[in-house]
Length: 80
Image (cartoon, rainbow, N blue to C red; front, side, top):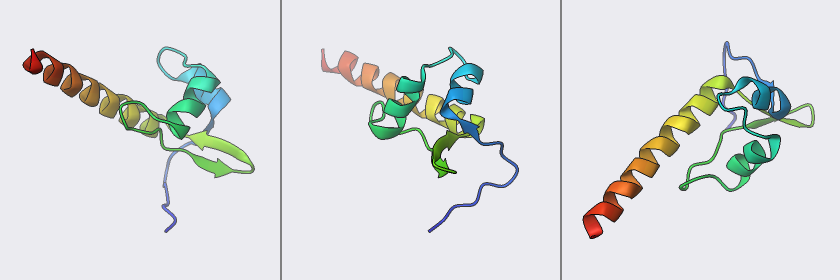
């Protein structure tokens, strides 16, 4: 199933690395897509042979990773 993304500007990973908070490296963005963080992967699409993401997808990724990290910390604190 192909998901349509209306009214969003796709950014190459190089563009995203310059525009996103903290200026993550292109390698980090690739790793976040391929491997993920806390089981959460950055959403991307291949367009014209290059991988792209959007600011919205990056923000969703940041929010999800933050929630997962906080849950992980709470679980570790409760185990003590």
